Amino acid sequence: MNGNVRAARASAPAKVILLGEHAVVYGFPAIAVPVSSLRVFAEVKPNSLPDRELRITGAGLELYSVPSSVSEQADDALAYTVRLFTQMMSVPPPNVTITIDSHIPIAGGLGSGAAVTAALGRALALASDISLPDHLLNDLVYEVEKMHHGTPSGIDNTVIVYERPIYFTRSAGYDLLTIGTPFLLLIADTGEKSLTRTAVADVRRLREASPNRTEKVLSAIGDLVTQARQAIESGDPQKLGSLMTENHELLCELTVSSRQLDILVKAARQAGAWGAKLSGGGRGGNMIALVPFDLEDAVRQALYDAGAVRVFRTVIESGLN
Ligand code: PMV
Image (cartoon, rainbow, N blue to C red; front, side, top):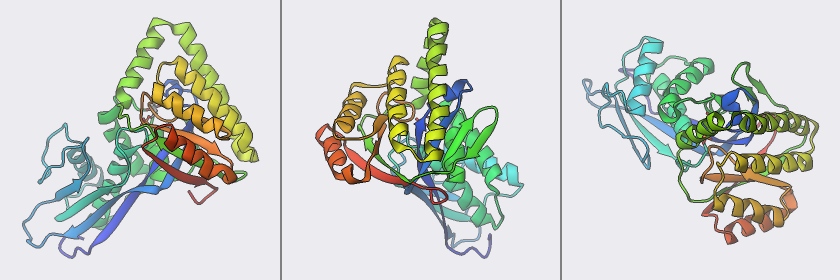
C-alpha cells in the first residue's frame, strides 16, 4: 500500500469475561465473549509527502502515549505494536497516518488495551498491503498485553482477535463455544477506573499468603466455568445466571470486588436479572448482568438508579458475535 495507499479502516471489539477471571491466570478455564457493538476503529490515510513517516494519532487514549512520530520507545504500547509488527512481518513501517478512535471505556475490564492493539495491527497490515493472519495478530496482541498486565493469561487478546465466544485455558488455548439459546447481557460501568495489573498482583500475594484457601477458591471458580459451558451450550440462561452470581461471591473472597460493584450486582438481581457479577480485573470497572429479555428496561433502570455511569447491552449468539 506504500506509495499507492488508499484510505481504509480496521477495527476490533470490546470483550467481557463471563466467568473465570483471575482463576484463569492459574490455569483454570474461563469463558469470554466479544462485545461487537463497542469497538476501536483505526483509520488509515495516505501521507501526502513521500518522505513522511508513520504517524499514529487519536483522542481519548489516556492510558497510552500517542506519539506524533512513532519511535523506538520501549514503554509506549503503540510504538511497541509497530515495532513487533515490522519485525514479525519483515516490512518497514508504512508511510501513512493511522487515527485511532476508541469507543471502549478504558481501565474498566472491557479489554480496551487489547482492542487498540488489535485494531492498530490490522491497520498496519492494510497499510502495508499484506495479510496478517489472526493467529499472528493474536501473538502480537499478547506480547503487547504483557506491557499492560505483567502476566496476562491470554484470554483478552484471544476473544478480541477472533471475536467469538470462547472457552479458554492457558495450556490448551481456546475452544469456540456454540450458544444453545441467545442471551442478553447488560454491562454496567461503576465509573471507578482500576488497573488489572494491581488486582492480579494482589491475588498473587493472597495466594502466597494463604495458599490452601486461595487454591480452593480458584478451583471452585474453575468448576463453575465447566458447568457454565454446559449451560451455555445447552441453552439454559437461568442456570448460567446463578453460576455467574456464585462466581461473583468467590471473586469477593479473592478481594477483587468493590463496594460499588457489589451494589450494582445486588441491584441487578433484585430487578430480576438471572445472575450478575463483576467482570475482568475488578476493584471497579464493569459488572455484567444476565437478564431475561422482557426485563431489560427494568434492570437497566435499576442499574442507573444504583449509580451506574453507563449501561451497554449485548446479545450473545452463535456465530454472530
Ligand atoms: O483485562 P481485564 O480487566 O478484563 O482482566 C483480564 C482477566 C484477568 O483474569 C483478571 C487477567 C488475565 O490476564 O486473565
